[in-house]
Image (cartoon, rainbow, N blue to C red):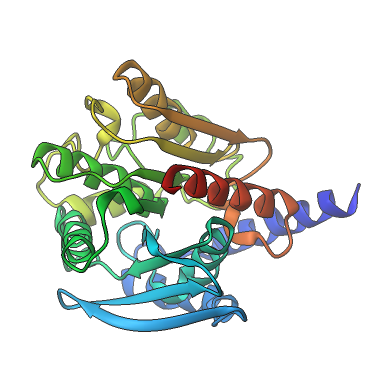
Length: 300
């Protein structure tokens, strides 16, 4: 086994151990556990300036790589099943993508379920975007991005903006996005034994925590079922071994039929949001550089 193959094997084994111990029924415990597990890898990186601000009552953070183009922004929505996650769980990943793109990023802490249900994160994403537009940033110089549930917010908010005739951002990136809250994708069932990270039994509970009485096929919750006409260019990256694989595949196919410029890249042997392991997985670094190159090209 090569050095890189061993690293991937080790990470998957570690993730499976964490998965077996996951207390997904207790949201408070899940939040604390997620923060404890990953926040130490998300301290401020050298070569960046980090500035905390408040937008619409939300804690947010500017991430500015040295010598970046400060007129261009990646508005980023973190993952975590709509119930967990924060700036402290995603700072490093967003920093590297922004660095490769040569632009600033703005990470927001949208309201979480079950305290705040759908469509609270979509409303918060809209608030942050409107704030950017009102503070000198042009739509053509803004990109959306997010992973997992944050990828769902990314695409769902694009639908919301389009439907409300609000100028759309120039482009979007989505990392392992969760785009189907009906859990109807074949991979959700067929990949459950292969997926080293996601807990199959947790999804129905977390869907209920987020949606409450809302229709799981609602366009801003499950955009995979809805017409994507008019959306900007979208670049999706997803792992071949994850349960959410079909969310990306089906959305990309439907979006192309709707005339959207969408690119999907499926990474062999990779898992949910593998991009976050850029420190030790060369493929993760390569993927993040591709995300940066896409943003740089679209925003140029």
